[in-house]
Length: 255
Ligand code: FPP
Image (cartoon, rainbow, N blue to C red; front, side, top):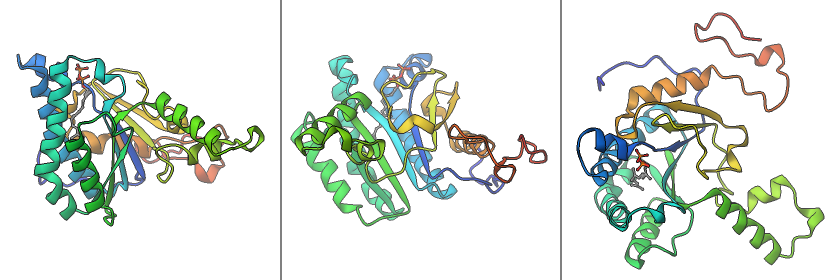
């Protein structure tokens, strides 16, 4: 990747990009390295992708960093991932704050060590007034768990069956104050949702690349956003001629 490369201005920018950062383990295996080396490389890459999102004017970036199912991984990998997160907060918080990144978390903090919980909460508090990019970290997050929690809270709040609407459910999710993702990127070629934002993904555009997460650089992000710009989002409707999106060659509208 050439850092000084000039990118053609983007015609349509997604407000919210969500990423399933997959392939760290395979990236490491291909180099004869332990899996944690892949996670460390993936974490380094995150810094590049965050900077690129700031540069491209993306407002929300959600990253799937640890799922409710990832606890089933070998103990060494789980504790290694926890240490990586602690280390990232220690090393990167000042810089993220300087870049105007606001940190948020979706999922449950309770199962994390108290020291890590405190660091996460401190990072959220420190960056809460930033608005250049909202970096939403899904950590100990699962979509089914999120919906289950929402149902429990609605019942606890005494919501009546006839009062339940899709809009109201949205207000009980962890993502209640952020828009649904416009595009979900999954690296490493897998075509699965893996319990990620299963409610919010209803009308997201999918972008799957064979590239492993540690190699998903600014060029790759740019390609994904350009691809998004040529998607027609119909939300189940038929588009009016004025809403049609030009083809990739930007000459002929597709509908
Ligand atoms: C998936 O690759 C990756 C993960 C489960 C962890 C992603 C976490 C990071 C990049 C750490 C950074 C997080 C923060 C919040 C700083 P995989 O291990 O499933 O890869 P594989 O499918 O090739 O085995």
